[in-house]
Image (cartoon, rainbow, N blue to C red; front, top):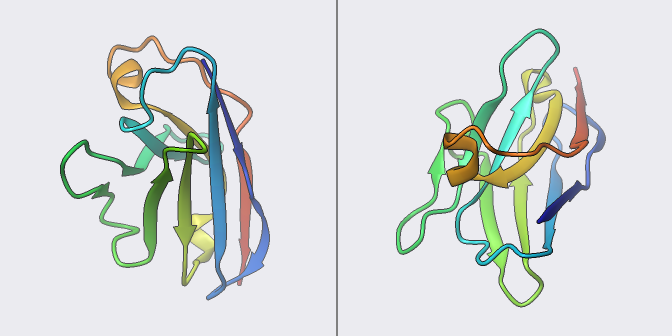
Length: 117
């Protein structure tokens, strides 16, 4: 399976970006995909996750500002990020929560989001 994240860029504080994660290969379902982010020297954290049959899960730091969604026909998961803050600056990745939990996930290059103050 390949998960390609895109859509990052430079934005001013208060601005918005929409990230995309396109899944290809043998991934059975996109319903377990999530967005993660990482800054230099810090651990990767999960910011938003889809839940099959339930409401998405968000980190407290992004609740009310970020929205995760999916388009099953395009096998793509999105992360709409509004009211961005400088502390949202990070490399953003998408991955399957199950493989991450089992520590078998392969991480792609991610997409860099830079929020200027």
